[in-house]
Length: 200
Image (cartoon, rainbow, N blue to C red; front, side):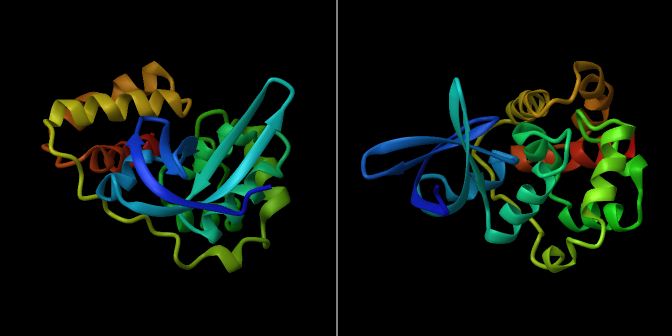
């Protein structure tokens, strides 16, 4: 089992990044790949979780040890799979997530794709009181962004949101608000999008 990988960040896609180690490019699914935009073509370290199934082996990457631990806690909950766990982490507000669990705020939790009332209640039941050691250091880095046009950022963000499990209806609903602002990166669009989606 892998603990972490350190290598050159070669590519960024809406759902994953490609990390090159010793001439091999590893496809690693991460929560909000565009937060790594400022580190493209640089060496980075990702903490790794490997999901092995009969028909696939998938690598999930995390910015730091605490993000990985939060993810492992989430996927230990019945009803939360590897991709659902990643979708929950994608908004970047880990402190808000932990506070929602501690305060038994199921309404906040049901804003995430694939999380209904039953799963939200299960998350609270299983994790309340078990996440306090993960509270600090959960803020995401602000990406410097890529040199491109605002339409490209919005288009990439739209693809990323749908890949994370948000419905076309949910994404379409927030598009007018997203398009009303100028952005300097896809990361910035996603930050705004997650806030709008969580407001409902």
